[in-house]
Every structure is written in structure tokens, then in C-alpha cells.
Image 1 (tube, one colour):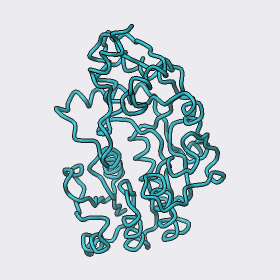
Image 2 (cartoon, one colour):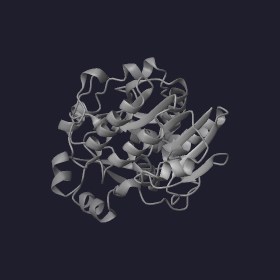
Image 3 (cartoon, rainbow, N blue to C red):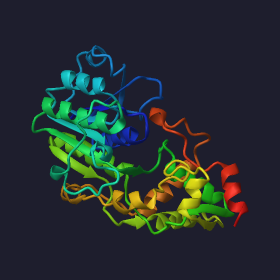
Image 4 (tube, helix red, strand yellow):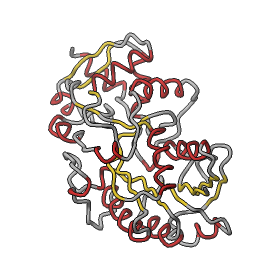
Length: 326
């Protein structure tokens, strides 16, 4: 099968390309050409998705049979892909739980009962929701939208799990929120990637909450795995939520994966029944953590996080202030 990956050089996209090549597909990627090459074996096509002429020009006479779209970040990108790729037999789109108008804080039940954004705001959630509608209209009965939650694994340049691994490996007292029992769910990028390739090839349709099953672990459980995998002597120093916020600690940014308790109480409660029915795997989280740590050992320096996201992590000077009063 001829598979076009929109994206293919960053985190999830790299894993999509690798999964497709492993399955024997002929693969091309379409990127701006500024973030490196795709995995060996894939054809690299270049252009700006926001330019309506770019994708048809890059494709030339090469006609994909299916698409996995990991890179749509604008309304124009969705419209242009719909216009150029409307005749493919399967289109799998990487959306986000942010497409839901009520998330966060959630909870999120079955996909067909939850409203998505209907807003012209140029924000992540409304843009993803609009892209879903545009692409679904162009591919009736053969468009799958994967509303992803937390994705983890090797090549993760967003670096939330990576920051925790490096900080815990450094050892010593580590500031953590006094909310280590809050739930967390994640999907391994490799599991999601292979599933997306198969969904596109099969022409599967509909919306799917594509994340790990609710209740798979807690923040404390994940950090314990990080300590086990790195072999560090880190010691947790729990700090009350109110104190963290008063000190200027930003949830999710300075302490990655931490959400204030009122949000965390429901944000991780996402119904993934359909994902499990459609075969989305959920490998052991320890494997994801261990493989991410092994990959980090091979990386000299991470690139800047994609899409203008802030680099995660608690500044050392802020950590020192919090530790000094304990």
C-alpha cells in the first residue's frame, strides 16, 4: 500500500513511518523539510501545508492510497489536505482530547456523546475540532480521528517524561506535588503509530479516544518507575498544591504531568472502550519508561519543543527556594 504520512520526522510521526515500513508499505512523508529526514526507506516530500498548491506539487504523479496525518496545526492545513487527498481509501487523523469542548476538566464519556468545539478561535482545541469536521466531510465513511491524550516513548521532543527521568536520575531531594495519588493514563507512541497505520489501511471510521485506559497508574506510580529505571537515589519532597501555586510553579509546565487537584480529579477519566475494541494496544508502562530512558542516553541535546510549546521542567532556582523551607 502507498501510504502518505503528513509529518514523519518528529516523535509520533517517526514511529508511524517506522510502523508502516515494517508492514511493507511504500511510504512518503510530507513536511516543511526543516526538522530533519524521516526514517530510512521513506520518500521525503517537502512543502508548506498552509499553501494550497504545495501538497499537489510535492506529490507529482505519486498517488497515495491512505494517509496518516500527524501534523495538522491549522484550519488551512486541514482544508488543503481535504482538497488534495479526498480520493484516498483511508485517512487516520491525529487529533486531541482538547477537541472536546468540555476537556479539561472532563470527564469524557463515549465519543458520540461528547460535544467538540465549534469556535472560530485560533486555539489548539477549536482548530483540531474544525480539522476533524473538514477532513471527515472529504472522506465520508473512511475517516478516523484519534483524539489522543498523553503520548510517551522514545523520540519524545515534548520532553515531559524525559524531564522527570533526567531530574530523578540526578538524585537528591526532588520537589513533587502532594498529589502523587492523582491518576495518569498514557499511550506509547509506538502502539498508537502501528494502530494508526492499520486503521488507515483498513479505512476505519469514527472518533476514538486514543489514550491509555483510565486508572492505569498514578503520578506517584510513574515517578517510582522513573526512579527504578534510572537507578537514582532521588528522594521525594512533597509540597502542598497551594504552596506550589503561590510560588509561581506552573502545573503541567514546571512540574510536567501534574494538574491541580480539581482538574486532575476528572481530566484523566476518559472512556477508551472503543479504542480497546478497535485494538489499540497498551503495553506495560514500565517498558515505555525504560525505552524512553534508553533513548535519552543516546541524545546529546534535544531540539526545541514543537509548535512553540514551552520547555518543561522546574527551574533549579525555584526548586531551591521550595526546598530551603523544608
